[in-house]
Length: 363
Length: 219
Image 1 (cartoon, rainbow over the protein chains, first blue to last red):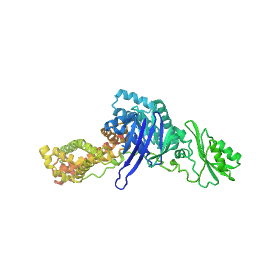
Image 2 (image 1 turned 90 degrees about the vertical axis):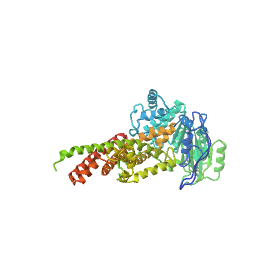
Image 3 (image 1 turned 45 degrees about the vertical axis):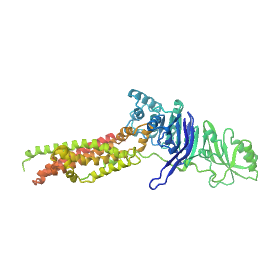
Image 4 (image 1 turned 180 degrees about the vertical axis):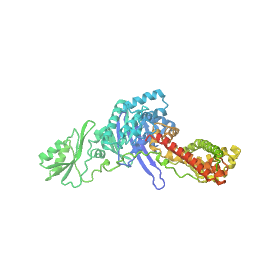
């Protein structure tokens, strides 16, 4: 449904700022009906990548194909029409304050030239779908963040798109609203058969809703694939972000990282190390989560009392199908969402104030 | 000093002249100033439809209009006024310099207002498949409306002040009245009466404009 072929985006040098390559040769394919995630630290180019899918940002080179249509070959008029097949939801909602909830949902229908009666019917249907059937007349200022984002989702779905782009759609929301909006996204994906591309720096969001994900760093895809495959891969940088188990400061003894899957559970590892070898084993880091309905985890074990048999035991475990390896400090990058962009919505600026304090009248 | 029953009707007429001048030039100023402000905004670098040359030329024209003291502008546009109205004396003739003086003023205010509209809203509309003119019509203008109303209010008040100045060179209205009676005939009471009238008109306008603007701002 979405194909990005070796897309690059270079922002030319401006006064005081050098040329920036935001996206550097990304090839990405999202299947029909897939819920795909793009994660990366701030400045990794993930937003630029999202904006290239509907050509809000035209790639410097490479091609963008959505629903079989090569968008990068279209003229402005063609691009405008094609954009109706791609709904978009933003971090800061971008609703119009001058319109009610219903008016906002109606906006894309007006632009598409849909008749008034049909617009009304569709707006009612959409607001019901997002659970705001009783808030038709509410202004954005009267809605909570979660409700605003629901209106934005309804608006994005108005023109019956096939693709939904979510650019940090939950990043300005509190945890409860985030869960609500994610449920909604999952629900509309299932009901409407949408393909969703979700940009986020929140790993919990990816774990909760995505079928697949790619990790972007400095404009390049570093890692990616179906989550179930990524999380079964011991050295995956993306898995290290999704289920971080970095070596903690001050850890002593031998450190062992265990990748937990349903096919390779941690019990056998613990039995071997603690039971057979009689070593002291503590879990000092990591996490276990249910992803795509299956149990996945990454654990950091601190093992003390090794008398030289540990390496052989680890090899035996690996031969037996367990995903274990020695861990050393710095072998895993810092998790992205712990220290990056806790961007909580820009305050809604009332545009009037600045002008009520009128500038000097010229005499 | 007991000639107020003679003066009152003239004062009323002068007030009406002022309202007429200011009213008509406000309508004209809005009709020309708002599109000019839109053009200034959308042609700016990085804006909806960047056209550096157009932007720079428009900016220059607007700055020229804004930096000229109104009293100089009055004299400067006299030939234009004569061309359009046939005379340079009286309230109808004054509408021309008033409009020319206020258009750049309003255009700048409109530009400031439109710039305040968050780029995200513009982007959302483009993402829906909106055209640039759709963005201006359905996003920039409606979203900036409270601020635009505030800007027009400021412009009307400025127009009243300009119109009083136009009185100095025979433009009619309250300014003319104050100069002819109050200043030239040393009738301080008439000057004071005119000032009070102007103050009332300005207060009423500002109050109405503020209220209207607040009503429109659904924040």
